[in-house]
Length: 238
Image 1 (tube, rainbow, N blue to C red):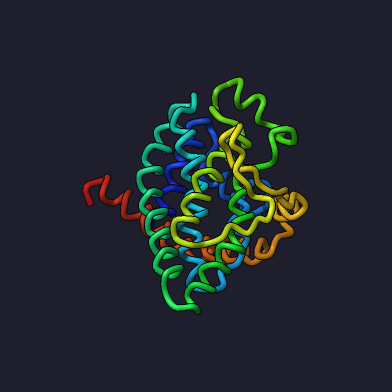
Image 2 (image 1 turned 45 degrees about the vertical axis):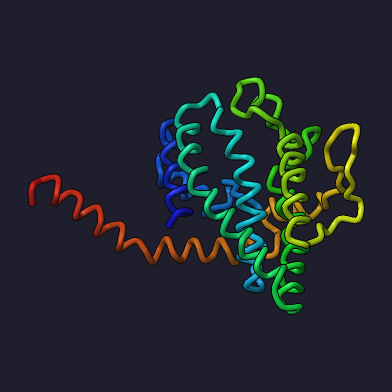
């Protein structure tokens, strides 16, 4: 329910630019609109629910907190509402991982496995490195973005490494180390080939996810039609 609401907030913000909801959905279904790469990874165990809440929503919050200060008003106002709701998801996910990390050996193994699989995709959520980002320069100039991809990714790493250590989980990165001079964690190279494969529609679940979305949209047509009919009837005093 929360996530569907977040989508509606953002579609509404887009509509202020003159595009219609139907056009936006059609762009999504035909592959002309991008969506977060993280949705194209499979969930394999119960621990994935915790890892997604902790890492994926945690990464989203870092992005969204920055976007609350964006120069585009409708987007900024949507982000304020979204951040309030996402913070609950992140806390819930972290609590799940904490309980499992301090549970039975099987639970501990499951929690660590989920962290291993979701860590790198979560870092990819911030987009390509600044040097490879086609839009960062203009987005920063127009103050649509207030921090760059690399700055936000670093903030997420610094925050999350400490959280993992607190509950006894290990970040799956042999290059991870604290730099006392910069006061930041240094981390290994992201697999950018995987990133671009997923972005370009060749990820683990891209085709399955889009097929399910199209089917749900088509099968739900009668619900939308009924809702519109009821709205017209109510408006006319029926």
